Length: 607
Ligand code: ADP
Image 1 (tube, rainbow, N blue to C red):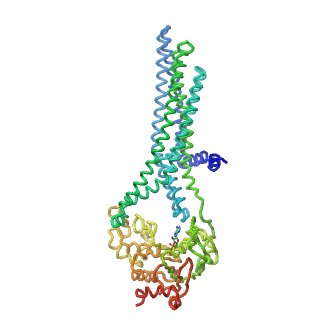
Image 2: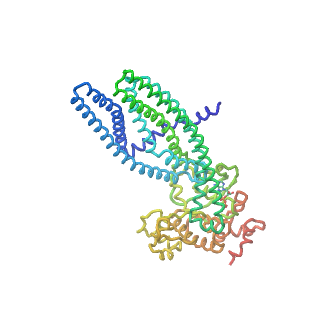
Image 3: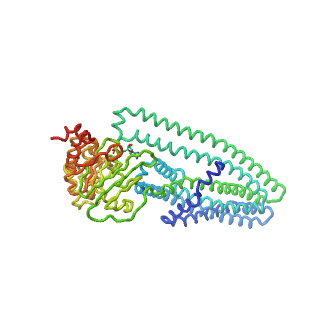
């Protein structure tokens, strides 16, 4: 099958579905603006038609003065001019009012779309946050809905423009058919040629968009890394500015190259259009002038035909250009729909999690990351009973974090199953299931909100004793007492110059307070202390273990910080659980991995 045909078959029809979504959003959110569009269109069509017809009658009246009854003709001409001015003035007032609302709504819809995209990013399956295809689609959705399509208003404005051009085009075509019919043919031929050149330019621009989207994302990343103060230490201490600057320049040059090639290709078609335009004007004037000179049409008709030809040409151009514009804008805006409809990676269950005790079971679980052929976990089986404290140890890269990601169902297992209380976790509803776990990941995030919001994810906790309790338990009370606004102090200085920069230890305490506040039956620490020395890590894990009490707890570390006080230890190695048992059992195995690790690290934990 020829490539072009294949390409066509692959691309679904997008214009109508996109228009439906865009107008659907407008009808739902701002329906009154559709009424304003109708008034604006009527005003534009009325004034455009008046601009062609009224001058003819006024000129004819003035020319007729020479034939007698000058006063009557002057009166008619003045009356016609007054009506004409009235129509134009009314149309201008309506247009100005419409533009005013258009400007306001353009801003409003931009924020509306940004918000929808942000919500979608937060609710889509986690694995997409690590998936380059999803990130690329997000980027295309953001760019496609901003400057490339002009967003919702960009698309609806394009439809409005076609409607007004159809109205004006129909009026001027009617006038031309009655007064100078051959002119229609000239206009249509030139239109066909111009459309051909424009279509070629559009294809060039779309090809450029596809290439630029990825380059933009990489350039944006490198650029923001360069400018972001948070990376200031690494940039300076590792002298990485030169490397990053080099990368930014490399991608910037590549982007300029794409723009340059695009401009060159567009230029050739633009010359073609200029030639066609000149020929059309020459032939049209010659034809209408000849009709006037031979007395076939009056002076007024001559003026009307010139006006009608111009209006018809620009209307037809507007229609064709508008259709291309709509196709173009829908093509970009559709990226937003594609991203919003990105298929779920994980099936959604509906089952509720039962109250009371919970048993977690991994049954012959194997796992590969999407788009990867490498088994990260192989045949992992383990049961964690309610209230059990499990220490998961192993070298970096052994699959410990992946084990937790599977447990929290951020990814689905490739083989085997994970059960909670004997039920496959895929059957539970997401919200219910995630309530089971409070996890502090190694790369936990604090946001530029107040400390209270960072811990409770709510600013309505002023009267909630639980928040003060977890602040106390996590050892953050002393630090909070020293902050000017206590718990309501903003973290980071991004939006508040009185914001605070927390130390590494304070950040960990805040993350631990957040996990405690969630009060879930299973708590997990996934090496949030990796940056600390073994003894400090041991202290934090031990204190945390006391706070956790009777909850189920899983502690991850590449060290043995939590092994002595945990009920069981699972040693990850070679993509699976190689050893499993209590500290005493594992330490007693002569050639065991755990025993070997313990001998190497015993200095920190034997006292
Ligand atoms: P650990 O927590 O024991 O240090 P991880 O579970 O983080 O180990 O990683 C186990 C393996 O999985 C490593 O080889 C890592 O490179 C790989 N890995 C981790 N995350 C991803 C991902 N999103 N995509 C592909 N491979 C990954």
